[in-house]
Image (tube, rainbow, N blue to C red; front, top):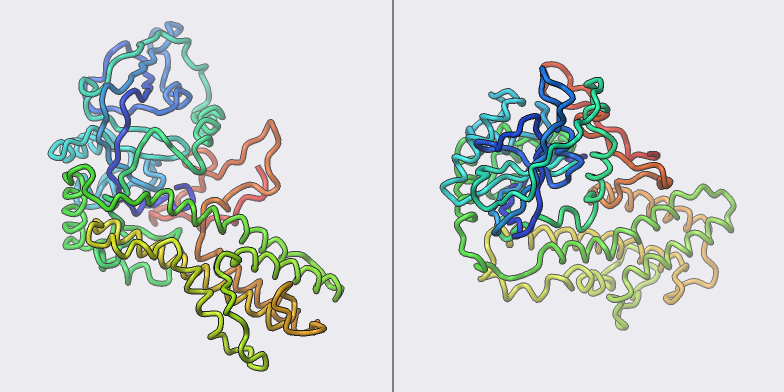
Length: 455
């Protein structure tokens, strides 16, 4: 959500009964209308302040618990960030039918309009993220009960800077949900996902995004026709009867694929980034890399698949059964579920298939090159590998893997390297703490630095 802060997905979800929320204020007054609640008290305490002109009287901290399942809509990206660079695009399109025409700090009107729209579909609130998660709760008298409304010691007065306003405690609490399984207090209904990357649903954005980096993608220039279709799809998904889907656990399926390949691809890149000049060292690392490639493909290496023409290294037809077995294993059985899938599920299936296909294509190609070079531990095609040939495929491997990992762009690889110590935390600059300044008049951000290499 942080690197790709301009969200492109809207997902229905639910918050289970018994979930606790927090709300900080300077007044002992129950919120009269739509308001924000935090999922972590460290966040809500930031707003727990003395009431002027009578300081030193403490602040008020409201704790709520859900009394039933709440129906929510989730906006992905850094959707709680108040910046004119795309983080609020999807919310504004749903609320007003246009993005960029309202002040990014026009929170009250935005939440009012969203709740008014959501009322027609039984929506209780809206979930947004930044380095924390918060819920825009539409009605404090429905679906929640008061656990406590405590008079706490107010937070100390501090200079209103980015780092002062959002304390280390808030960032630390938010970081607990950075990686899988993420924010578990919200259950997303991926069978109802609506994506602005769905090229059939939103064709007007395809040409606009051509040649852009992911960082620059926005949804604000969507055509009015496409926006109407998006809203209709979202509204239909919100009214879809519970259980009317294929029943496939898409979240787990995606995590299985990421879990199988993320660490192994990262280790392979580490081997390929090693600085070596000695021929024996090159051969040794290449053999280690080939073993790693074989390990990734082991469940798919068919006994019958062997090189048919060792003199023609461009002839890779013998690897096609291996590639197909690798690329289709996790989705093959889903063909029979197509009739019961929602449109959203068909989009997810397309994404999973495409991702699996590209991973398996690249890894199979790299492995086959190692087989022809004579460095595979099982299919050894040469008595003595040629160092010049091994060096050539080593460089080709590095390029192929770099392109694959750049294309995948998995968040599991966004981390500090080396890892942080006990008194440190890894932090990716997020609004408002450490976020780059917006280029005036452009409504866009300067390009991000590479992955952080320190805390």
